[in-house]
Image (tube, rainbow, N blue to C red; front, side, top):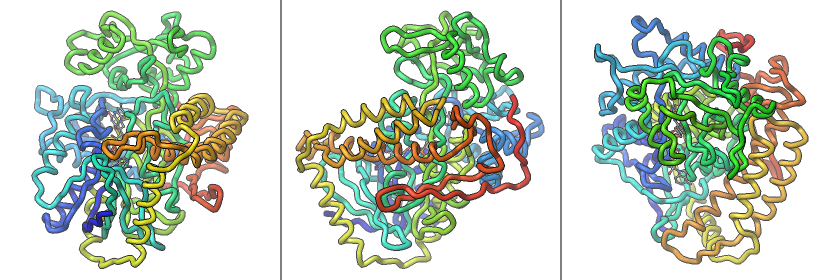
Length: 578
Ligand SMILES: Cc1cc2nc3c(=O)[nH]c(=O)nc-3n(C[C@H](O)[C@H](O)[C@H](O)COP(=O)(O)OP(=O)(O)OC[C@H]3O[C@@H](n4cnc5c(N)ncnc54)[C@H](O)[C@@H]3O)c2cc1C
């Protein structure tokens, strides 16, 4: 096993990870040693798939916008579960991030006066989503990656798969990973570690997420005894293409697209009269599923999936070419549908993990509901700093990744300059993890990881989707528990050492199972309907008993739950009407 020492290690190379590495490096004037470790090549990280844009108040006067209004929209969108102090940081810092991205080369769409163009997004009162056509994530990643490559003190470890954090008491000292090219095991020892491993929507099979979004960092944190927050809140994006689940960005509705049922009606009139198709995602997803349940949907014969239509036919085809070129490319390539001529079949798909690793407002990872764990931060979709609450507004994730990428990078660098830490146990613990990796790679077992994964998909798609009920969730609980038992006897068929994706996927499936377990247990316990969590038996939001975050911690043989109050700064809960 190779032992590698760095001042700062960033695990994950999406928008949050790249931001963290850049700002750790820059804020130390390139004096600290920084490592960036990723299971994929940097430019294959999921963030390249982000389409519609990033939110931030850029021109308050000419757009009649304000940071207060952005905060209000975000908090109302979150169904009042967002921590309001964290939302204030988000709206305060997001404009600086968009300007920083401008300076490092993101080719924003612009107006004739040179201003960065901003489009409407769901649940936002004012158009405030900056965009680079419908390939915003790709352009942000490319610019951040170029910036990173210009820094002297950052070493990149592409295609290294992390399996476990090394925690000794109240400190995290790094993690163990194996090199995909050789299966050589490496222990990364850090003074400061930033976890930026992305979301976990691959817990579902019908999802907009890339295959890599298996929540590895979140599951590793959970197994290391770190609390996870609000995991029961999974966002279902209303418009995923049938049958693949590929995202059709909300920008398609932002640019004027309609939703229509089998009768051709714009059914959002019944559910959100003023915002119509641009109501927040939880509401639009439920509206689509209600239309389908009440017999006004259509069915794809091959996949058996029910759907409704996203209709762009009334938009100027020049607008589609300029602002939604990727959507046109996707629908033509996947379904031979030219969106200016035919409507697009869509339905809601798992899209975003609102919950995640419990952090404080500076991205510091917590070790209990209220105390900090030393040496470790989390940023991006894997973290729950709690700006999205029970329902994220579209385009607020790229702002969150950028804002807390910078904050955690700077915090981690400062910490690394200060501390001199050692753990006598580090090497022994890393060696134990190496033995576990070898044991799984070379061992025998009777269970196929892929059969377990497919069974998990069925459970989650059926029982933890847009509409939930207690009977279904309890069935899911039972099945997940039996799948977790089967996982203990799993086998890796491929015995090779070079790019053993079978081995990597087996670890990923184990991570998905742990997170599915936490999502389901948390969902069963939350006896109300709020944001993306809607339960038949408890159809109303219950602020008296449930205006609080779920904190899930691993305990011997189970998960232990605690609840902490939402941080309020003056925005009082009100009925959510759009
Ligand atoms: C199709 C799509 C479009 C979207 N469009 C928008 C949008 O327009 N606006 C918006 O605000 N949000 C959007 N979102 C959400 C947004 O894209 C994500 O929340 C965001 O990109 C997450 O970035 P991240 O840096 O946290 O993680 P990711 O970009 O997912 O990166 C995670 C990183 O962690 C690494 N990693 C993971 N596990 C391991 C491991 N075990 N070992 C080593 N490395 C590991 C991966 O290799 C990767 O580099 C979209 C989401 C989807 C699915």
